[in-house]
Amino acid sequence: MNLSQFPHLPNSVKIVEVGPRDGLQNEATIVDSKVKVELINRLSAAGFSNIEAASFVSPKWVPQMATSAQVMNSITRRAGVIYSALVPNKQGMEAALAAGVDEVVIFGSASEAFSEKNINCSIKESILRYRDVAVLAKANNIRLRGSISCSFGCPYQGAISPESVAVIVRQFRDLGCDEMDIADTIGVGTPRQVQTVMQHVMNEFPVSGLAGHFHDTYGQALANIYASLEIGISVFHSSVAGLGGCPYAKGASGNVATEDVIYMMQGLGIATGIDLNKLVDAGQFISRHLGRKSVSRAGNALASKFLT
Image (cartoon, helix red, strand yellow):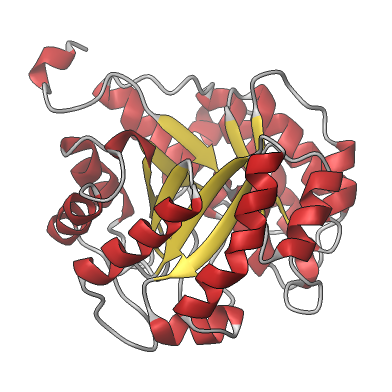
């Protein structure tokens, strides 16, 4: 396809695969660490350059992530792949360093109400808590990524202003974040709204380091990704087989399915570096293990045609 037909779209994008962490953390039944390792290995073999693989939070709050250190120590690491982990505080950061992560993710919220529900502290307190994490990350040459939840709406607070999102982006920027995720945690965002929010945060952070993290609760995720492409965003998060949700946002469905995103990118002629057939295979693998059908429409369609 001749990209001159779409002069406003990038030639390539980076897809951050979040299924092993953001996807699986919401599963009620504990997934064996060997299955997690196999999933991550399949995803790295499919060509992902960044995989969110673990979370060093208290097992009391997220039992599914209790085996994160074991998983990180068991995966087959591929050269050039960034293996990321979520960390809530200095203790989590120290555990992540011991496990050899390449990138740590700190998470805040554009909603005061969601911050209290999700991490049991105010937005201001969360920023203070992450100072030690940021210092340790920089001292150990570890990438630091900031993830801002409820950037387009909150299940407790309702509408979120673009200015509120920009304020958190500025604070995370000042901590030294290398990349910033603008997340639609409950999937309520629509394309024009997404462009408005993204254009606000572009005033605070380089567009090359901004990522769209869209849940598909209202079926808007692919449209929101396309809207983001139109204004220069070239990093997106997605979850294999559409795994996920949010334990603190009732009714929120999973992230947009990675298979659907890659299928769309291929149709647009935008390079991702991902082998779609291997990705579909990984999605079918984890779906079989979980005992349910993948929610990826492209994944299921391709699986029925090409895979046994």
